[in-house]
Length: 60
Image (cartoon, rainbow, N blue to C red; front, side, top):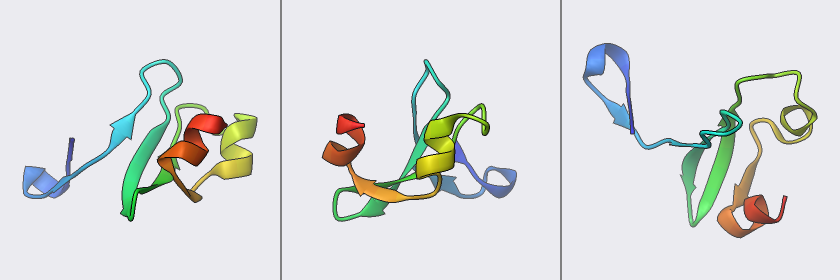
């Protein structure tokens, strides 16, 4: 869980400790690839800001 502006709001965010990727729930079991530590990473270039289901992300 991450905090928003001045800690007044919160947003549920899932992150990968190994690569720094972050995923934001988008509803209906889908997640948006919302960030990564290294934006030059080919995975970010191909899938950045895309929304897929949890199963689809696991297959990648």
